[in-house]
Amino acid sequence: MLLPPSSPTTPRIQTAYRQQIVAVLNQLVDAVVAKYDPSSRIPYDALALKGKNQKPLMYGLFPEVVRGSEIERSLSSRLGTVLQKVGKAVAESGGNTADHEVTVRGEVAPDVLEYIRKLVRPGRSTDNDRPDIRAEMQTIDGLNRGSMVDHSVKIDLRVETEEREYYFDLKTPSPNSDQPRDMKDRLMRARALRLPVAVDAYAVFYYNPGGIEAPYAAGGVYLDYKGGEVLVGRQFWDMLAGPGTYEEVLSLFAEVGQQRRQELLSLL
Image (cartoon, rainbow, N blue to C red; front, side, top):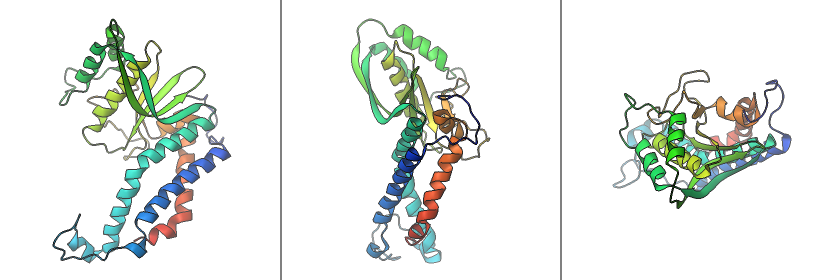
């Protein structure tokens, strides 16, 4: 927890930062509205000889569903960067220093990089090789000796408090098979580059598709859930600014959604 616990009824996101978040969400909607401007829509040809993602049967049955699916994918593809900015604003609202898409630079022993490559090897099995973040960091600390090489890695979000540094790598809650491996790789390299300073680094899935309290274990072959290497949904948002933050973030999305609802519906 970056901030001490308090009553969930206490506002966690200050007004100025709420306005920042609303502006970021409006920019997201602006980009999608511009892309799918109905006036520039190309008439759909069910008998086109060539085309991209043709769905002639579904389009004939329910064209709004096809159009809505395309718009949803466009929103989702932009959401990653948007959530980095939202996370930055939430953390700063709590009095912390934060930045998104940061590059962590430093020196690291080649043996450490080779060890991390083994940790994230394709096809890793948990049968006899369960992820253990504490043991892994002990191994890295022991290997990080002798000659060093310059290295760098980009991380989605960094938050600094007076006491500690936090690194977060954010991904969709329905990751493809490679994404947990990539998250683990980046986070372990960031940890190694900051040695001898101990930092906290988390894989973040920014909501739980099964519900707030449902079990979630995507990428568990590589990510140590039991060891606290992963934050899911409310765990992440409430860590940034305290209890009730997740609900406030959801309310801001709903606020912008209500304000821009008719505009989005006009795209169908």
